[in-house]
Structures are given as C-alpha cells and as structure tokens.
View 1 (cartoon, rainbow, N blue to C red):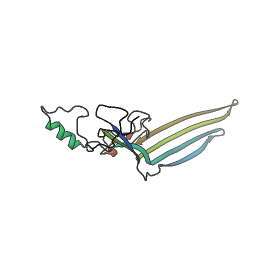
View 2 (view 1 turned 180 degrees about the vertical axis):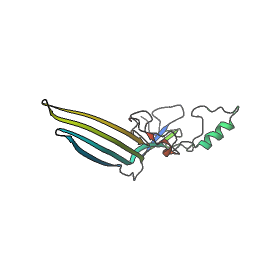
View 3 (view 1 turned 120 degrees about the vertical axis):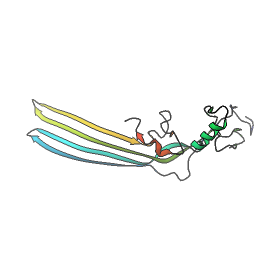
View 4 (view 1 turned 90 degrees about the vertical axis):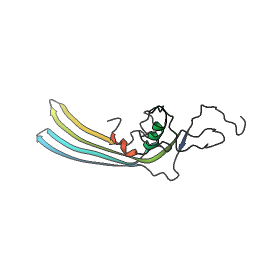
Length: 178
C-alpha cells in the first residue's frame, strides 16, 4: 500500500457517511389503560388501549441530495427535454473529500436522531376459567403504527432513507412492519 494512493479505483462516484458530534439520544414513551369486568362467575372481559410514541429515533438522510428545483432545472436544460438519466443531476457538494478518494461524493449519508413513531392499539380479551378443567381465552388486537423511518440501520433496503432528504416529514406513513 502506497501513501496517498487510492486502494480502489471507481467509476467517478462515491458515498460518504457522517454522524453528528452531538447526536441526541432516542427515546420512547409507552402507555396503556386496561379495564377488566367480570361478566359471569368465571368469565371476564378485558378491554385495553396500548400505545407508544418514539422521538429522536435514528434515520439516514442524504445531505447531498439535489432539491426538486435543481432536478427540474437540469431536466429542462438538457436537449431534447426532458432527458435526465438517473444520477445525472448535479449534486450540491462537488469537491473532493480526501486525497485517497479522488471523486466528489455522490451521497453524503448522515445518521441523525430526527425520526418519530406512533403506535396505537385496542386490545380485547374474553377469558373463561374452570370450564371442565380448562381455561379458555379469545383475544383480538387492532393496531396501527405510523413513523417517518422504520429502520435506522437500513437492514430493509432504503427503509431508513427518506424519498426526499430535503423534506423528511413527507415520509410520514404506515410503518414497514404494520
């Protein structure tokens, strides 16, 4: 290995990953309320609400993503318009990051604590005890989970990366696992 010599030669694109120095700690609030009522001697009904709210959850964001205005301008500037190919839009950061990486970064992926999540559920349970030496239970749960990033480490491809890094709130919707 030679000093200041790239170990890998690539085709002109590169990605950079960053982490803020003062990253906030993610946290989650959990809450529930349950009501239980005896219907008969050995039969009970339980109805409950369970919820959680996640704040400052981890997500990835591309700090070098062009804005929609930049994409539109590049699209209209090419002839014949529209003619943009994937990856052909100029990126805001165009300078080389290091002598070991001769190309400007294509994506600057920052891990940040800015995602949110909300989970709400209604849980109903009917339990019957001592019926012919058996205990029987039937339960039902209705739930819904909404978040702005379902996977902070991108184990599911692109689940941690917003569709538009310039508008991360636009990704609010049902969680990937909902």
